[in-house]
Image 1 (spheres, helix red, strand yellow):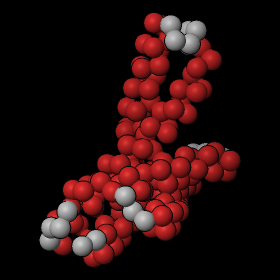
Image 2: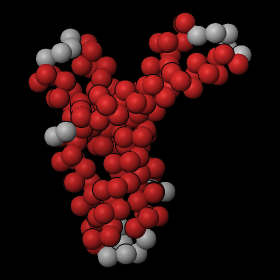
Image 3: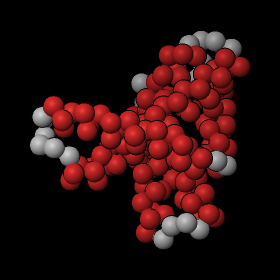
Image 4: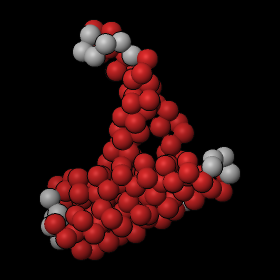
Length: 154
């Protein structure tokens, strides 16, 4: 795991970049109101903040003591996968919270099916509609954090 300082500062910076990326993309498309732009930015910020320490630790594990190119590739892969995965999970839980009003009684067989398929539906929706909000700013941030990691993680 990263040091506490690296985890906190990295999570704050990573969350800021991902939130800016999502807000910028939604804003230039003009499809939401200002309050909804903030909600989308917060969703991406929370996902990125949670993801950073885990992505950092996974990258260190995958990269090991390898050459610069391998560390860069590991960082690109791990930060991408963990950030998208974590943000998708945050989205899915928020999505499930909305639809819970129409679900069966908690912990019944039907509820488990509704829970699983609501989460799966939300994950598919995030992959189809949400991943594009990482471009172009999030991609530049990914390159920056990957280069930083590759240079400093030895």
